[in-house]
Amino acid sequence: MALDIPIYYYTVSCVTSPKSSRNRRISAMTTLMCACVLATAACGGGDDSDTSITFMSGGGSYGDALRETFMTPYSEESGVEVVEDPTLSYAKIQTQVEADEVTTDIVPAEGYWSVQNCGSLLLPLDPEIVDTSEVDPALLQDECGAPLLTYSTAIYYNTETYPGESPDTCVDFFDTGAFPGKRAVRSAALPNPLVECALLADGVAVDQLYPLDLERAMAKIATIEDDLVFWEAGSDSETLMANGEVDLIMAWNGRAYAAVADQGAPFSGGEGDSFLIYDALVVPKGVSDPDAVMELIDFMMDPERQAELTTRIPYSPTVEGADLADLPEELQPFLPATNPEMAAGTVVQDQRWWAENGSAVADAWQSQLVT
Image (tube, rainbow, N blue to C red; front, top):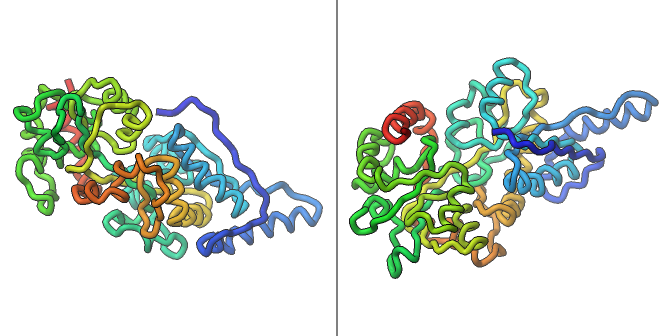
């Protein structure tokens, strides 16, 4: 859904001041572009350079974090204007590409969508420009997406409902006898890790999860249907936790942190089973200057910058070497990167399976769970 807030513009001069070896790769292309602009001005005519990158950010706190960590610093160091579009719409990208009128240059997309549309709506990354060598290999699931951040769907429990207990595994989540109460899950079918969680609860080993047995998973989900509550936006999951409206919840770790730290929600957990998902930076086919866009993506792969992003929004970096030692102490238990017990129970969701089987999941979800 488009957000009704203004688009922001960031304009800087053609003077560059790189601060790291990766920044120094803000390329001969950019330098040449700036030189051409200056040369035109020196000759007494011509307009300012109209080269810019339009970044579809999604707005809100996510957009704020991306702007402060990447967009503005990149503009200041490269001289390339970055224009923020605070919407986030896959349909908008598809329409632009199919009409051959692409105005969006870069999108932080869910991993499954990157896999699903690689080569059709999205350009492959240029390995000569974008360095993904420090990215966790488990997250490199297609040629078009540069993983930017990870977030986990983990199981959290109401400490007032279950004092002295810690039901945060999939077996616990599906055991309504031992742990009665309302369970909240995301309403969207894709890529909903309730499917994986159902199979773990039904006895499937972690290393045997994929390819997912959808029929078996939906049958297991049917056993707890009467106890399910659905949340749509991430803010809804925070509200359910803060108000104590549910007893167990599968929630994004950043939202759980916000509910507990900011709103005093009586919830704990996250150290049992959890499912790691990533957002990837993608480039639509038909952008006017793909090299310039990929220079920005490369800038965003820097470990220090990704660590800085985590200080602004509570999700983990994708690259090795990102130092998270200075994060607030209360945040660290919510991130697998800083909580070994959470990391031990983490399953990296296979976005390739979800890309291939999304329609089947959506159909099954609609027929069984949506009334």
